[in-house]
Image (cartoon, rainbow over all chains, first blue to last red; front, side, top):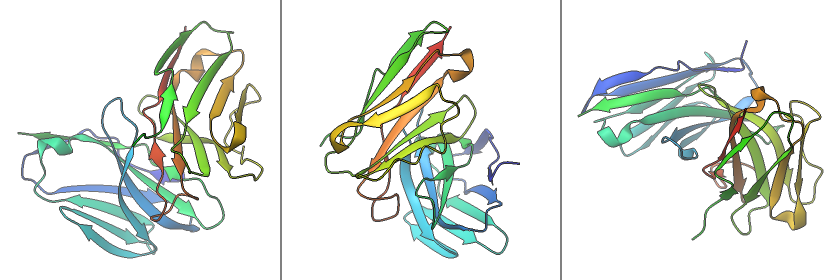
Length: 111
Length: 116
């Protein structure tokens, strides 16, 4: 069983829809939670960062962490065709200094 | 400003050959990471360098893989006697310290390795 599970998609939505992306994890030591966006043939870029449980909002993006359920989410409001990319969740504990990534969800926003 | 630079961007090699992949991190970044991304898979941690500390090699899949970082800057990932299962995109990232919100990881665009 992988430490971090993420549905690979693809997830196809119409422009303007609300998108929900999720990851589950098994390691209770994870404290830092991130979402990265990766366009085709590019490296991942950091979108959102959350420490421990709670919500964080940045423009059209909201990240949620529920440590009791070992479940994290990324919501994208008013989705745009430019949001079409692969979204990777990533996590880190306090001991190890390397991120553990999910396999990524491919999102397609149709104009 | 320059980001993380990786070379070559693409590499095709024959099974059994050795390859070297290069990473130029962002100037001043003390932490450097190598990850591997296979088709449809997430990023698999390979190795982590932090300043002058001993590297965390816990992710290297076999003794055919090695990496060094010279002068705290440029890093080279070497794969000896390449196998077809080594085909993947090899991503390098750097950060000011370890990867947190204050010092997020900045990734290069990767080296796409194909072993024939």
